[in-house]
Length: 156
Ligand SMILES: [Zn+2]
Image 1: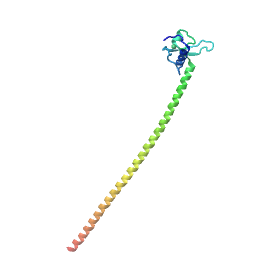
Image 2 (image 1 turned 30 degrees about the vertical axis):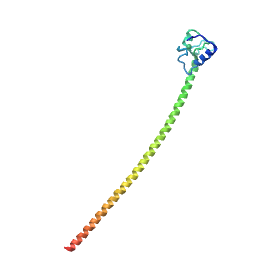
Image 3 (image 1 turned 180 degrees about the vertical axis):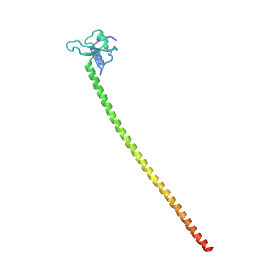
């Protein structure tokens, strides 16, 4: 790829490619982006990221990657805080979902408990009825036995 500036349309597309969000790692030309310090009068000691090729060739006003470190870091902080915001939102959503699930489980559990109670009550009734039946039979037997004894006593 040629590093010389082409016609104006190429330059503008290259500028667009050179615009990087956050901390740039590589220039669009494939070269690494390196941190340097400005010694211009307008920005003395201000640190900047620059395409290694452009820095080596001492190109100025070229279309290789170039970004002030403070601006790049500010970008990074903004994108990080955006991501943190999204994470927080997803955590809140997760908690709401969890709460809903717990409520559903509780409802199911209570329903099961109620069902068990009714079932137990029904069984108890069965058992009580059965016992009553047995007691009745036993009573009948006792009465019959008594009658038989009375009859026998009279006979004897
Ligand atoms: Zn470059």
